[in-house]
Amino acid sequence: MEQLRQQLGEIEAIGSVMALLQWDQQVTLPAGAHQARQRQVETLASLLYKMQSSEELGRCLERAREIDPSTLSGMERATIREAYREYSRVIKTRESLYRRISGLEVTAQATWEQARRENRFDLMAPVISEWISIRKEEAAVVSPGMDPYDYVLDEHERGSSVQKMDRMFERIKQPLIELLAKIKQPDNDTPGVAFPMEPQRELARKIIQDMGFNGRLDDSVHPMTVPVSPPSDVRITSKFIENNPRFGILAAIHETGHALYEQGRVEEPGLIALRPLSTGMHESQSLFWERMVGLSREFWDHYWPGSGLAKHGVKTGDGFYRYLTRVMPSPVRVEADEITYPLHILIRYEIEKGLFDGSLSVTEIPSVWNAKMEEYLGVTVSNDAQGCLQASLDIHWSLGIFGYFPTYVLGAIYACQLFDAADRDLGGLVRQNIAQGMFAPLREWLRDKVHSIGRLYETPEELLQVVTGKGMDPDGFVRHLTLKYSEINLTTRD
Image 1 (cartoon, helix red, strand yellow):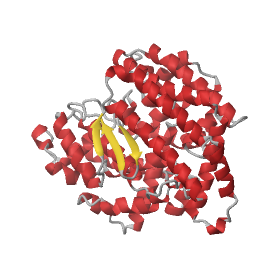
Image 2: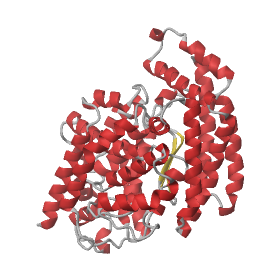
Image 3: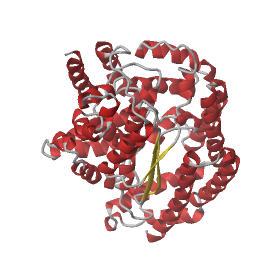
Image 4: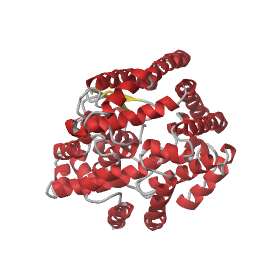
């Protein structure tokens, strides 16, 4: 077991270097350095592939699998399970494909940035097509006979499939569309907030420090979390926009939720089962803090008095709370409210599904996109810059990340369940603690129930059953949103 842990620890170290390069590319890399960075990443990717697919690692795994399970800890048994699963996947993936994936990640990033600047979907279309081809090829060699889209869904959320995601979306789609029709506000119902960028950063830094984050916060085009060497080195970025504090502050809280998951891990080199459980569970942690905490009335009752917002036209904490929670359908996913956000994800899910099963071509994305925006959100898209270009400018597709979008909705559902379970276990005092800026009880509850558990359980469904007493509950999620926004709507109208 010690030999296996040593090899897995060395693989983790190379992964940390690649994560550091990823952070540098987003935050400090000079504009003309992308080709050099591509060579660096491809070289490291090749080295990582050799380590992950080595015969020596295979022999260590076989010996570890022969150890009497009763002599191992639960985390050691889970590490053997996870390492074998990963090894089996890697050895089936040709090195040429592995290098192709790593190289395209770098060049596609530069294309994404150019397309974003020039508002040109045609620049991104070939990249999307190339990534779909790669992912289908990967699925064919790693899991022959498995539906390619099932493969990428399962990659992010183990046990996921088109069938399961279809059922989940069916349970929330119509209720959310009906709720939206009842409570959406006109464009001029809640005014914007004139809040300069530097005070936004100061407020965001104060909040994330209070939450317990002790890593770096930088600016980038797309907010992100980079676990360089968790738990000791975890970095986040946000994007602050003049006169739009909602985006930058909530993004900082969101990324801090991710970061706290990474910082809550137990540091045991080579025990890879201590990694976060799944993408959906990771998203649950960011959405737990952003939406269940950061979009609560109690949170802003606490932070508004010292925020400096009163100097910029926001006279009450309640006024800022209503600004943050306004329901206004928009073509932009990252600016969407809690109710329309899952519908944005549904649009992307249905487009991805069509791209993978062949019922939709990349060139058809604009017309399909526009039709779904009108049907689900009541938003008329006037040009590609607001529509399909916006969809392609989610950084996920430029990096070949398909099957990820549904995890945002899964994460929102998990977050709702975990919040209720935390309130139950903490004596119903969670909202009172939030109103006092006391986040340690919540953070430590999450650390005990989720962060430190890692992959001891094989699926999120198992963890939810243990921690909350039931599996994924889309109906409870809809009930939560209905109650919350019905109350906000009544208060606003009064």
